[in-house]
Image (cartoon, rainbow, N blue to C red; front, side):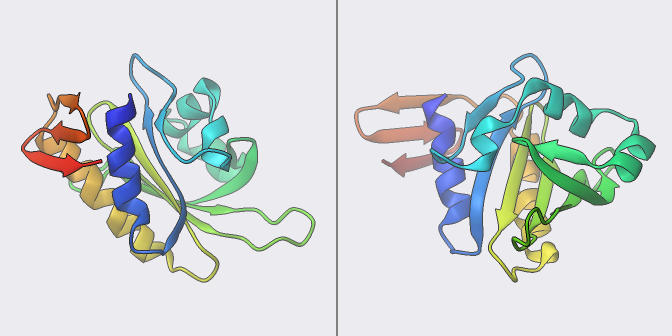
Length: 159
């Protein structure tokens, strides 16, 4: 799924995110695109099921994990029409900083972004929402790679 990497690169380009991922949640429950060596690279099918599951009380009480990193759910509107986002906060382990995380739900994929230290969750929510909205508007998006060019739906990218 190399063509999905251009979406991750686009999410990262303004410098406010330290990680971004496109993750399948329907038939292909795995990480479609992210950066090498990051936490999101280790997201498991079980973690994906928890995010998209409808047991909100469970993860509000117990939290969830992303790539084995413990997190708290701040707001879950993943199944609210017109929103389709979730706001998460990483838990500090050993005194490390905590980070805001946002998840946007598209037709077959989740858009997940983790901000750098001090980046407001609203900024991340907007990024995840906008890309998820784009992917919902173009549900049958096809990605072709020809030489160093990618054609993604109606948009052409140079690699």
